[in-house]
Length: 115
Image 1 (tube, rainbow, N blue to C red):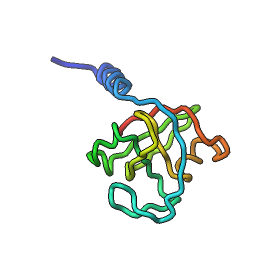
Image 2: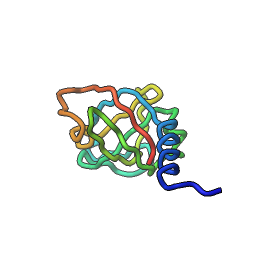
Image 3: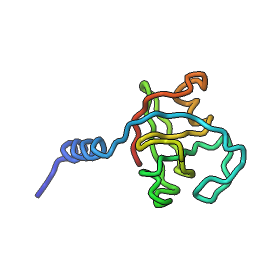
Image 4: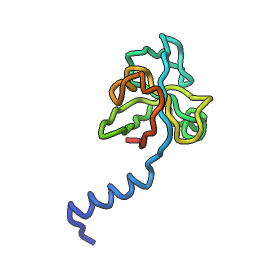
């Protein structure tokens, strides 16, 4: 069976969209402390803490996610568990959050997916 490139790309887009998550994004300051994945985290790192359902007991440590908000996106590495998050929520380091919006926003509705 032969597929054109455009058909394959359309299929990949559909599959990616099917695995997208949505939830609230907040931010935190790790200040050099260790994340649940066992690495020290700096405020300047683009890392994310996931809700327990997506953290999957650490199975997703080190994976990259793309977080989207209002036409902007940021890539962050899974490095921590967000105990206060519900499924789909993300807690970004302050530097990752600021790529999407000023810290004064505090909380925003985002979509995200693994990349």
